[in-house]
Image 1 (cartoon, rainbow, N blue to C red):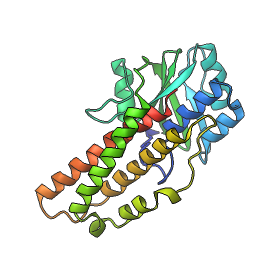
Image 2 (image 1 turned 45 degrees about the vertical axis):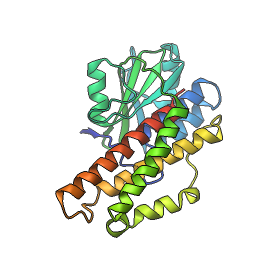
Image 3 (image 1 turned 30 degrees about the vertical axis):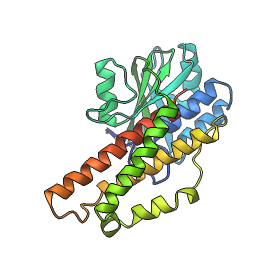
Image 4 (image 1 turned 60 degrees about the vertical axis):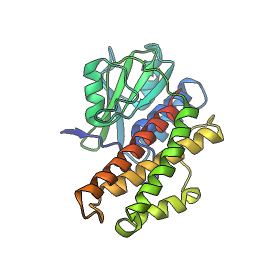
Amino acid sequence: MIRRDYSADVTPGALPRAATLACWLNACIAGQVSPDDFSEQVRGDDPHHLVAGLPGSEPVPLLEAVGRLRQLGGVGASLALPAPGDPVGLAGPARFNAAALDQGSAVIVTGASLGLVPTIDARTVVWVAQPAQTPVALDPGEASGILRRTLLEVTQRLVALDVAGWQPEIPDLLINLRHRGSLPLPPGYDARRVEMIERAVLCLDIVGLARASDGGAVSAYEMDRRTSALSDLDRSARRALVAGCGR
């Protein structure tokens, strides 16, 4: 039975699966890492990954999928992390956008006009290929600056809502940003891009923790303020991650 990937619900401090695939596929296509390293890093702790729906191909393991994507014209990859009302990283067509939105993530293979949408079938992650258009790349510098400002503003708003009183793990995350483990990024990422990706993952962790608890909000007004703050942070974090993981 195939179910949603829930890419945002990953282990705290870890990249979403689609972000890992986009980063390592870019590095593999560019010749910076071997197909074996690509396959191993994307699979991680998952038992199996398959790519299904490639033209003229049965479902294949990641190792074989790289060659097939190259043959189909693939020259790079971009990440999509859409949410309702914010289709960041998507450019169509509608069928692919709907599938990516339903799963919360996708990878678009530039040059191949294909997108890969993750689903889980039993214990296997299946990347389902569909026709997809290449989106306009986001500017990493702009996305990083917006995320920095949003994190500062949202932190102040959450402090006013006594975030420490209803979710003490969130202040701990903010304090210990520099003590979190390194993300499994491929070679070639400069310090600024690594920092942006790490900050984006931190912010997604904060959003996930806060949304998992009904918190200490005692009025509809406070709940609306918290929802608004978390939505702003989620949107900026997803955009920064899309910008940071693109080619």
